[in-house]
Length: 98
Image (cartoon, rainbow, N blue to C red; front, side, top):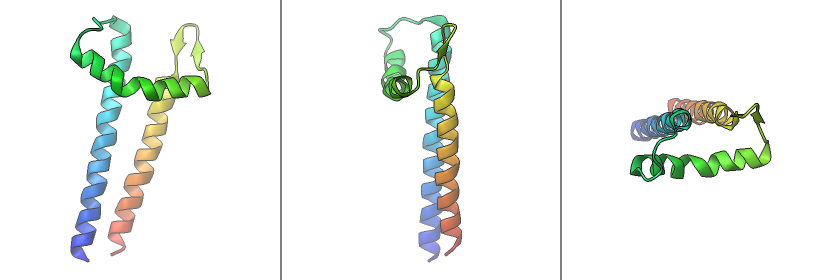
């Protein structure tokens, strides 16, 4: 049982890390929209490749552009924060039940 508990705690840690890295990538995406970098840069293309599909889905469902400002990254950040806390806490509480 100790092995299963430690495994679940490790999975919770990895899930938490993955969500945190994605949030950092999303913040980088928002900051890059302010400076308009060169689109051929591989780092810029990776950030756009990772974030654009999710942001486009949010923009299609709920158009959140006011005065030229796109608020879909904020909605995604809030949703990611909620889902991250939910999944990580459920995994941790499940692990501690053993």
